[in-house]
Amino acid sequence: MEQTRSEILKTIPYGFYITGVVGADGEANGFTTCWVSQVSFEPQQVVIAVRRDQRTHELMEQGGVFSLNFLDTEQEDLANRFTQPLEPENGTVGGAAYVKGETGAPLFEDAFAHLECRVVGKMEAGDHTVYLGEVASANLRRPADILTDLDTPMEYGG
Ligand SMILES: Cc1cc2nc3c(=O)[nH]c(=O)nc-3n(C[C@H](O)[C@H](O)[C@H](O)COP(=O)(O)O)c2cc1C
Picture 1: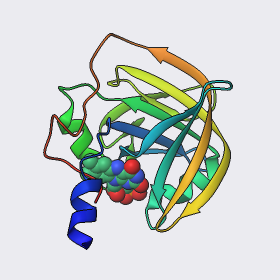
Picture 2: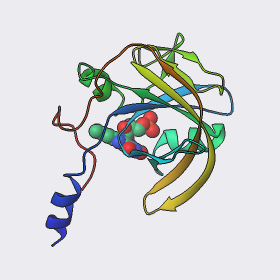
Picture 3: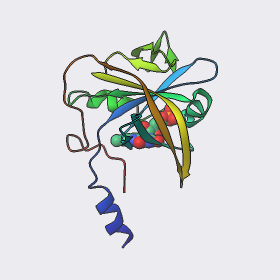
Picture 4: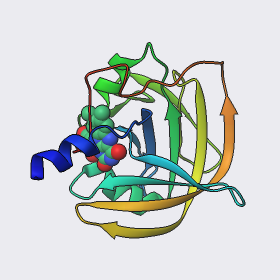
Protein backbone atom coordinates (compact mmCIF):
# COMPACT_ATOMS: atom_id res chain seq x y z
CA MET A 1 0.00 0.00 0.00
CA GLU A 2 2.74 2.40 1.14
CA GLN A 3 4.86 1.26 -1.82
CA THR A 4 1.96 1.73 -4.26
CA ARG A 5 1.45 5.29 -3.04
CA SER A 6 5.14 6.04 -3.57
CA GLU A 7 5.20 4.45 -7.00
CA ILE A 8 2.20 6.49 -8.10
CA LEU A 9 3.54 9.71 -6.61
CA LYS A 10 6.81 9.17 -8.48
CA THR A 11 4.96 9.25 -11.82
CA ILE A 12 4.08 12.95 -11.35
CA PRO A 13 6.31 14.79 -13.88
CA TYR A 14 8.49 17.69 -12.74
CA GLY A 15 10.77 20.31 -14.27
CA PHE A 16 14.14 21.01 -12.64
CA TYR A 17 15.24 24.40 -11.32
CA ILE A 18 17.84 25.85 -9.02
CA THR A 19 16.00 27.91 -6.45
CA GLY A 20 18.11 30.94 -5.52
CA VAL A 21 17.81 32.34 -1.98
CA VAL A 22 19.48 35.14 -0.06
CA GLY A 23 20.03 35.45 3.70
CA ALA A 24 19.60 38.50 5.93
CA ASP A 25 23.34 39.23 5.54
CA GLY A 26 23.02 39.24 1.72
CA GLU A 27 24.66 35.86 1.30
CA ALA A 28 23.30 33.94 -1.69
CA ASN A 29 22.76 30.21 -2.04
CA GLY A 30 20.77 27.80 -4.13
CA PHE A 31 19.40 24.27 -4.30
CA THR A 32 17.88 21.96 -6.89
CA THR A 33 14.11 22.06 -6.75
CA CYS A 34 11.37 20.24 -8.63
CA TRP A 35 8.28 20.73 -6.46
CA VAL A 36 7.23 23.88 -8.29
CA SER A 37 3.92 24.93 -9.89
CA GLN A 38 2.16 28.01 -11.19
CA VAL A 39 -1.03 28.55 -9.15
CA SER A 40 -2.49 31.90 -10.34
CA PHE A 41 -2.72 33.86 -13.62
CA GLU A 42 -3.63 37.24 -12.15
CA PRO A 43 -1.41 38.01 -10.40
CA GLN A 44 1.09 35.47 -11.67
CA GLN A 45 2.04 33.31 -8.69
CA VAL A 46 3.90 30.05 -8.15
CA VAL A 47 4.37 27.69 -5.22
CA ILE A 48 7.52 25.85 -4.24
CA ALA A 49 7.97 23.31 -1.44
CA VAL A 50 11.15 23.58 0.65
CA ARG A 51 12.22 20.90 3.11
CA ARG A 52 12.30 22.36 6.59
CA ASP A 53 15.49 20.66 7.83
CA GLN A 54 17.51 22.15 4.94
CA ARG A 55 19.97 25.01 5.46
CA THR A 56 18.43 26.90 2.56
CA HIS A 57 15.02 26.86 4.30
CA GLU A 58 16.46 29.32 6.84
CA LEU A 59 17.69 31.61 4.04
CA MET A 60 14.24 31.47 2.43
CA GLU A 61 12.73 32.55 5.76
CA GLN A 62 15.23 35.40 6.15
CA GLY A 63 15.15 36.76 2.60
CA GLY A 64 11.44 36.48 1.78
CA VAL A 65 12.35 36.22 -1.92
CA PHE A 66 13.50 33.50 -4.29
CA SER A 67 14.52 33.01 -7.89
CA LEU A 68 13.71 30.06 -10.12
CA ASN A 69 16.63 29.31 -12.42
CA PHE A 70 15.43 27.09 -15.26
CA LEU A 71 17.82 24.24 -16.23
CA ASP A 72 17.95 22.81 -19.74
CA THR A 73 18.22 19.19 -20.87
CA GLU A 74 22.06 19.42 -21.00
CA GLN A 75 22.39 20.62 -17.39
CA GLU A 76 22.01 17.45 -15.37
CA ASP A 77 25.49 18.06 -13.84
CA LEU A 78 24.40 21.42 -12.52
CA ALA A 79 21.18 19.93 -11.15
CA ASN A 80 23.29 17.28 -9.40
CA ARG A 81 25.74 19.79 -7.97
CA PHE A 82 22.95 21.75 -6.28
CA THR A 83 21.52 18.73 -4.44
CA GLN A 84 24.12 19.15 -1.70
CA PRO A 85 25.03 22.00 0.65
CA LEU A 86 27.24 24.50 -1.23
CA GLU A 87 29.44 27.33 -0.02
CA PRO A 88 29.38 30.80 -1.56
CA GLU A 89 32.87 31.66 -2.89
CA ASN A 90 34.17 34.55 -5.07
CA GLY A 91 30.76 35.64 -6.30
CA THR A 92 29.69 32.07 -7.08
CA VAL A 93 27.76 29.33 -5.30
CA GLY A 94 29.67 26.08 -5.69
CA GLY A 95 31.42 27.57 -8.74
CA ALA A 96 28.18 28.71 -10.45
CA ALA A 97 28.29 32.44 -11.22
CA TYR A 98 25.30 34.66 -10.50
CA VAL A 99 24.17 38.27 -10.49
CA LYS A 100 21.65 39.65 -8.05
CA GLY A 101 18.20 40.44 -9.42
CA GLU A 102 15.96 43.33 -8.43
CA THR A 103 14.68 41.42 -5.36
CA GLY A 104 18.24 40.58 -4.27
CA ALA A 105 17.81 36.89 -5.14
CA PRO A 106 20.68 35.34 -7.14
CA LEU A 107 20.17 34.76 -10.87
CA PHE A 108 22.51 31.97 -11.98
CA GLU A 109 24.11 32.79 -15.30
CA ASP A 110 23.95 29.25 -16.70
CA ALA A 111 20.14 29.07 -16.44
CA PHE A 112 18.22 29.57 -19.71
CA ALA A 113 15.50 31.59 -17.94
CA HIS A 114 14.88 33.23 -14.56
CA LEU A 115 11.82 34.18 -12.57
CA GLU A 116 12.17 36.26 -9.43
CA CYS A 117 9.45 36.03 -6.81
CA ARG A 118 8.52 37.74 -3.58
CA VAL A 119 7.04 35.47 -0.92
CA VAL A 120 3.42 36.55 -0.29
CA GLY A 121 2.23 33.51 1.68
CA LYS A 122 3.30 30.19 3.13
CA MET A 123 1.92 27.07 4.79
CA GLU A 124 3.43 24.11 6.54
CA ALA A 125 3.04 20.85 4.62
CA GLY A 126 4.42 17.98 6.74
CA ASP A 127 8.20 18.05 6.41
CA HIS A 128 8.19 20.92 3.85
CA THR A 129 7.06 24.53 3.83
CA VAL A 130 5.06 25.61 0.78
CA TYR A 131 5.91 29.19 -0.25
CA LEU A 132 3.59 31.24 -2.43
CA GLY A 133 5.66 33.56 -4.60
CA GLU A 134 4.46 36.45 -6.72
CA VAL A 135 6.45 36.90 -9.91
CA ALA A 136 8.43 40.16 -9.72
CA SER A 137 10.67 39.84 -12.77
CA ALA A 138 11.30 37.47 -15.66
CA ASN A 139 14.21 37.03 -18.00
CA LEU A 140 14.59 34.63 -20.95
CA ARG A 141 18.28 34.26 -21.82
CA ARG A 142 17.96 31.72 -24.64
CA PRO A 143 15.36 29.31 -25.99
CA ALA A 144 15.70 25.81 -24.48
CA ASP A 145 13.76 22.80 -23.25
CA ILE A 146 13.58 22.37 -19.50
CA LEU A 147 15.27 19.37 -17.87
CA THR A 148 12.64 17.06 -16.39
CA ASP A 149 12.67 13.88 -14.37
CA LEU A 150 11.87 12.03 -17.61
CA ASP A 151 15.40 12.96 -18.87
CA THR A 152 17.40 11.75 -15.86
CA PRO A 153 17.38 9.08 -13.14
CA MET A 154 17.43 11.89 -10.53
CA GLU A 155 14.20 11.90 -8.58
CA TYR A 156 12.41 13.60 -5.69
CA GLY A 157 9.04 12.22 -4.72
CA GLY A 158 7.28 9.11 -3.51
C1 LIG B 1 15.80 15.73 -8.28
C2 LIG B 1 15.78 16.50 -6.97
C3 LIG B 1 14.79 17.43 -6.75
C4 LIG B 1 14.72 18.12 -5.52
N1 LIG B 1 13.68 18.97 -5.29
C5 LIG B 1 13.57 19.55 -4.07
C6 LIG B 1 12.44 20.36 -3.77
O1 LIG B 1 11.52 20.55 -4.58
N2 LIG B 1 12.39 20.96 -2.54
C7 LIG B 1 13.37 20.77 -1.62
O2 LIG B 1 13.27 21.32 -0.52
N3 LIG B 1 14.46 20.00 -1.87
C8 LIG B 1 14.58 19.40 -3.07
N4 LIG B 1 15.65 18.59 -3.34
C9 LIG B 1 16.70 18.44 -2.31
C10 LIG B 1 17.69 19.60 -2.29
O3 LIG B 1 18.17 19.91 -3.58
C11 LIG B 1 18.90 19.25 -1.36
O4 LIG B 1 18.42 18.83 -0.10
C12 LIG B 1 19.87 20.39 -1.17
O5 LIG B 1 21.02 19.90 -0.53
C13 LIG B 1 19.33 21.52 -0.32
O6 LIG B 1 20.32 22.51 -0.18
P1 LIG B 1 20.98 22.85 1.26
O7 LIG B 1 21.44 21.53 1.80
O8 LIG B 1 22.07 23.81 0.94
O9 LIG B 1 19.88 23.45 2.08
C14 LIG B 1 15.72 17.90 -4.53
C15 LIG B 1 16.72 16.95 -4.77
C16 LIG B 1 16.74 16.24 -5.97
C17 LIG B 1 17.80 15.19 -6.18
